[in-house]
Length: 153
Image (cartoon, rainbow, N blue to C red):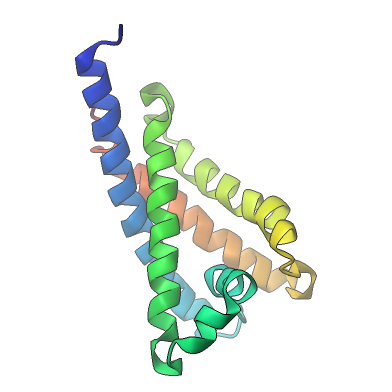
């Protein structure tokens, strides 16, 4: 039988992690505004995923509202990633190094797993674009793990 206090602590950490993941994805969105304006990133991963997995839906959305769809999908991914962070054991979530490592892992899983499975051609991206995408994932991980409240369950 599991301890009800422990279950509450895990559930609380998961909810807080999800909230932090959403906020972290929003921080990434701001960072991506800069990297796309500087033409370091041509098309963000959430946009690439939408174009690959739901092109008809994406094209049915009015052009002026597509960015909102991309952001909402990205924030949802971010919240899901935060939930996964909240499921990590507390002793790991409390480590100072976990945020950047977690962000790196998210980037690596997308590049090595999700992107090839969906047929998103990452070879067209140059080193600058890959570094910009890596940097925003490091930001994501840092924000997810930064506040003390995801750790205090």
